[in-house]
Figure 1 (cartoon, rainbow, N blue to C red):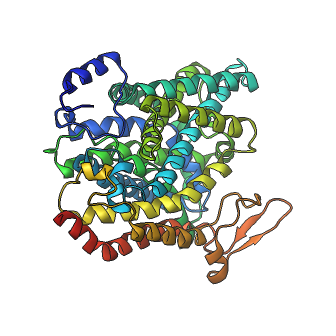
Figure 2: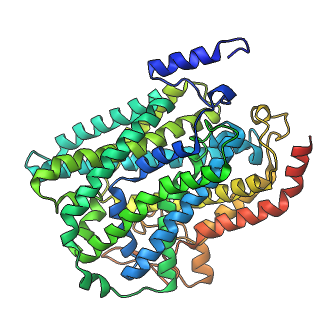
Figure 3: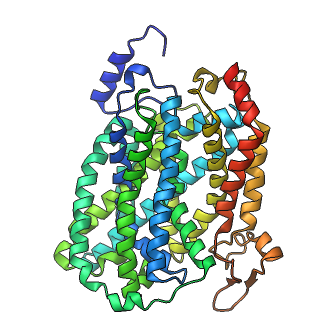
Length: 499
């Protein structure tokens, strides 16, 4: 946009039209009117989904006790969203999406490496949310006796994809309003769900669950972190770029963390109670995480539950597809932001078709996705957070778009650190699909040094060894990347800020 164009008039007309045309460019000062408290609504709405209740089953599958599961869930959720809150501060300081601000650490062109990882992660998350919405709709329909087979799944998939893409194409202003509405709707529906199902919790059964080893507890903790805050960390600044420069950084961190962590902490805790009390429910969640929760409801509430559950999942997917469109633009794809969201919507639909209609179960591909991409994403997060901690000034916004500027074209230290941390991290995790010959290559350092091995069993392959499912590589990748960046790039950041 030219310097003499009527920016405020254009923005107002865009708001009236309901479609945001802003892409990855810097947000003008006059448009930065959001307050830290505004961040609560999109994060809360995106994470108040009843899918959080399903995580109770995932956590208990590590073989840990009720108290251990509660502890790791609360700690993992709060800490992971706290990291998102710290990244959100960069949005205020840089006025641009997360993957554009990341150019300060990786270079304007070097940023393409983490940018591709971020784009795939966002596509994966929004796809899995769409899959759950599709499966949940089919299950609710089956429980009501209205079908539930392939035709129902096809219609549900098309409706869900249309809702997600439509909202993400409209953009920031519509999404922010929509998220505040959905917060109240889905929150109320979830409270009613708890009231109707609390009788299924058997405290004697829960307290009899045996405790797990340190490695099992660690594995559950890291799974929770990757499934919640670390799954959103690559887009955390996308929503804070509209914050006023005078906004308190502490308030941004606090509202971001509270909005993201409040609902999941309560929902996962309740899910642990349900799954630990009912083995049938726990087993069903593996195939259909949200729909299975509907099977213990009275018939009169199924429709309300189904609508609320689908809208909550759509809410989370909208955040993902909006940000994945921005990431696509940051990679140099020269199309309008609404078109980028539409392209991502097509990929979302294809992914939903595969898992909903052809995959044997949901949990295997989901956990495989979390671990495989969680490692390089954690490495990027370590570099980004360390770089942010080193900076004493706001980002040079023009230099974020100029390879000849202070941030340069490629920062080989950051590139090398991300690659090294990812290689080490992948060696310290095992994939959740050991039966898949193309996807069981991880864990090579565990095999070499910690006694882990892949056992081929006709009933299903599995990893043997104390550290097999500890997911140690995620935290190791984040820690290595943070420390190396803090030491190796201190002088580089100082010189950048002195220019």
